[in-house]
Length: 265
Length: 252
Ligand SMILES: Nc1ncnc2c1ncn2[C@@H]1O[C@H](COP(=O)(O)OP(=O)(O)OP(=O)(O)O)[C@@H](O)[C@H]1O
Ligand SMILES: [Mg+2]
Image 1 (cartoon, chains in turn yellow, red):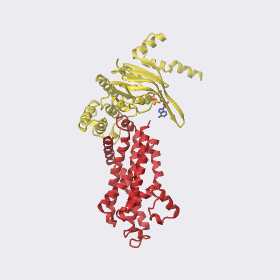
Image 2 (cartoon, rainbow over the protein chains, first blue to last red; image 1 turned 135 degrees about the horizontal axis):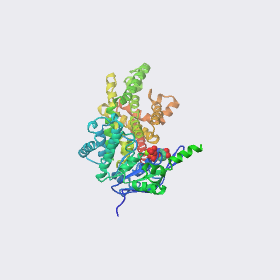
Image 3 (cartoon, protein in one colour; image 1 turned 180 degrees about the vertical axis):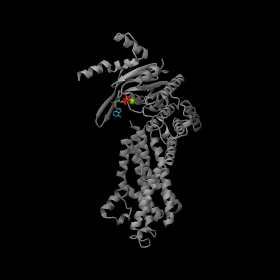
Image 4 (cartoon, each protein chain N blue to C red; image 1 turned 90 degrees about the vertical axis):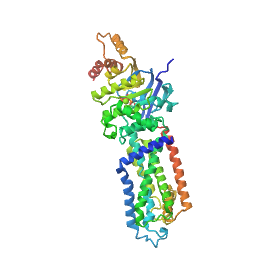
């Protein structure tokens, strides 16, 4: 039996803050096979980033358990971190370093020698096409360049599973396509990709399988084509529905319902 | 952990070199206070006739206060909180290093930076008639005491940064710690303070660090003063490190 690349069993997250408690993730189960590009969709505030932070050891699980590459993220976080590459929603980069320095530092922290770290940085700079900017300070990078550098830094240690939280939000169409190409290339080299997105065409273009989360719970899961076929059958549609329609149906935000709400007022 | 903290420390030093303006207050404000304080009070404490000056001028007595002031800006914590707010901190937390090395890395850099600034201030002040009674070895020891204090101070500030994750709150915390520097025998020795002030100063750990520093300048090697100074540093450092380990390992 092959172990899943990402496995979450009934995970929960409750945030406790000054103004009460937020139950952001409410019993999510996920299983992503090795080699997949898995899409994680949901409206704003659904719990996507929270799930990603839990799966990448950056946040504790309130309940449940999760494994990445077969390693428990809670009990064996150090080993899990070697298997995980992560680019969070806010590209967190150090503005005072150059792109190359940042990659070298990241590689060193993953235990590479100085020599190997430098070589790896060169490879990655080429991969994300930042050759001209590599020795400039990150402060002066554009949003798209920061995203690409963040992506590169998530790859320094050749992770088994790459988590990308909204990797293309805020990018122009050309940069978005570049990131798509990179995701495909990375996946072809054998890396499992777990990505969240707001763009349904992105999920359609990239993902083998996806899950839709709404208010902390998974409401749909499956291959894009299967989800569309299910909706077509259930509603007895003539034309094939788009993934947008699947999404709206799953999250209860259908147009007719929105219209209905307006009429009631 | 040691190696990772050095790697991260090197990066923090590079960061300081790239933002030299961030060092300006740590040298300008202490020198400003030194000049102003000495300018206002030197006539009350003439060099030859004031016993506690041990034959030196009043600036020699005031210098420790300025050195400690320069060590008490907690720049490490301000960078750390910027990193938390900006998200790079999470990037570092996602690497398989001991999380404590993130804290220690910044403290290494703080040690070096404070030492360099203290050396600069000492070298600037030597031509103005200040003598380091304890000699070259004492000079080095002075740098060590001041730098270690800089580490302790910014370590506590980093705790605030980790706890609040807010730049404004971290800035505010320095305003809370800052007054500790003045509840000390910074104008006259402890035995000349008013009784309430003397009690307050005796409770204040900074007093003993200041007295250790001062003894190296005025007296030479005074085992009691140095012993107390290092004891205070050791205890506060241990406390700060223990709290930091707890705080960063439970960071969520
Ligand atoms: N640190 C926090 N403290 C308290 N509540 C939080 C915190 N982070 C997120 N939340 C809450 O948890 C819920 C889920 O947030 P999360 O960021 O996971 O959503 P998301 O699906 O990533 O949304 P988006 O598409 O806007 O990025 C939201 O209601 C949010 O307000
Ligand atoms: Mg999010």
